[in-house]
Image (cartoon, rainbow, N blue to C red):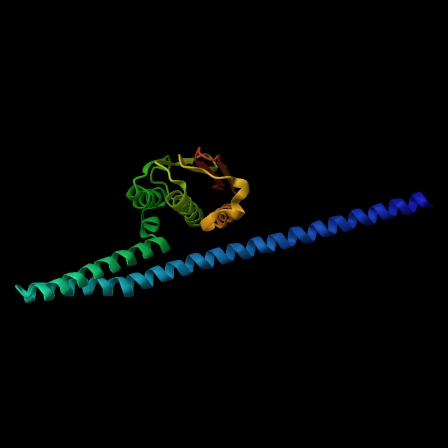
Length: 246
């Protein structure tokens, strides 16, 4: 009788364990789906804000810069003080227009929609890293092939975060970005020769480094892919991403 009771208790315990695992899996799946919807909504909001900035602020700032140029020509040989004030206003207008364009491209670069992932990543790396004196090498086997929009957007955001981390934290001299198309997957690698970091200490990393990497992992996970981070202090960092294309 004791053996039968023990057997029943073990069976009940095993069933309770299975029930609990089922509930955890179900809630994890719901959370996964919710995160996917949040990220999709976020991208749509980025697209809307970029469009509004372009249509309203960007065009207004461009018109202001043109008006100031015309004003300078109309005044001709005016006093040095007036000429100086006009030139200062023109420089401010140009700076604001340039910053507005940067915000637009950060929100939703048109090159991603128009030309695809390799061109968008190339533009991003050259505009962010090369201006900091970091040499960038980019190679791709896609050869003009377009990927599903969800894949292009997710990988661009991953590359954007990786490039931002190189720019802000790595103190690197060289960086490499590789896109390789397999039969049923896409592999992306972003590496640098910077100071590296301890992956185990991401939670204590300054400047939101760890939070950014967690966001990258979540985007890749939503595509059913995997992300691996290899970093050693003083030996640089490599981020490998692989996502299915079927």
